[in-house]
Image (spheres, chains in turn yellow, brown):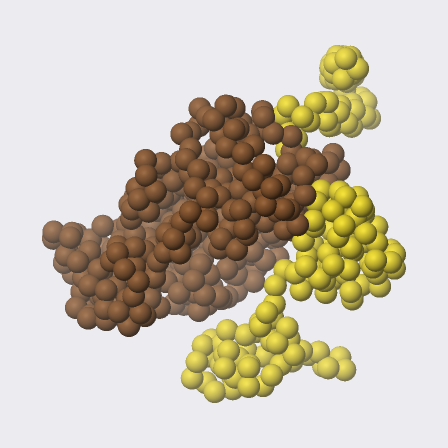
Length: 170
Length: 358
């Protein structure tokens, strides 16, 4: 697609502008977009980075701001403050996740698909975590089987759960 | 093996070998971020802290199950010249971030399929890079390396948040899986923009390897997962797999369609680029990349015979500033590099004995 403005260069900047309910689509080349100085384009280029995106999310969203409490909340382990974190977009240490949890959780939901890890668990150190996850899964399956009146299968699951429970206890 | 061997042009498997689906997929990469428990992240760590991290990593490389996946050699960034650092970046073995961080180092395996960065943004970044389309194999390798390290290292891990990383965009699995693809005809027909937008809707990110959007130089794109929390490693790889398969099919169909409907246009473009590369006396890296992309397409479609298909990835690395200067054994101005680049490409084309146009 060619630029709607100059018609010479390929359109690489595509965006939709909505002004008072009226929708307009734009397809421009980089040069024309720059000349036009569209705010959206300014936002997209320049020193745009993950950090800005993060601090943008935290500063714009009243829910995050409110829950984060004071921006002077400080991680007692590394000394980083929440406001420093929102500027840099990086944590100083693992404890920051706990220290900044109230502000962090709503943000994580936005940038990630959820705020609950379901992936790999460290083999040695994870210990019973993997077993406990498996237990949750088995218990859910047991409920489904009972509802479906598949009692033979349910009995097998029940035994499996018992065995796993004893292992976790140990 | 000495550092010089690692810096040699064709020491890396991903540059040397083809791998599956190599007409479209250049390489598969998996990177896993890990941090040590109870340790300040590199951004705020003192030199002493970083030295201790480095020692822990080196110890694990020698004495854990990791040693069976080795051998590994450790290179501290401060011991490397600027050109040498540049070459490692151009070969995709380290990130630019590793150089910026003081106390950065890398553990390298001779086949350069594995590199473990130490004291980058996170304490450890395990990276596996294989030629062609082999995402699962790449992940399995990274997973084994991770298990090996964990035998001797306590990771910062939280049951709810997963592996804790310096940046919240990596928390959870800490994994970024990506594939590098050559998509010249999807760019030529303009379909790429629509596809790229669609891809971002399913939690994946696409970027040009050199340059952005449809201006991606050399028509090279990297597709990777954006989400690291709330999906398992297998789900992430599966998503990427699904999208990559579609892209491969789209590009192949588009190539055949273009060949049938507009053969002359395609041949003209490919042959002009071949002519320029075979005879130019100076060429900048931007033009070199786009001409190399055309030539590679010509090879894939049988328009150019006798030139090895590996020429694109080989030269896309070898014609970068760092690699050029390394090969020349001296620092060069951009103008000098353009002359040297043209000479290198001419020589490379003549190195294949029977190169000819169909």
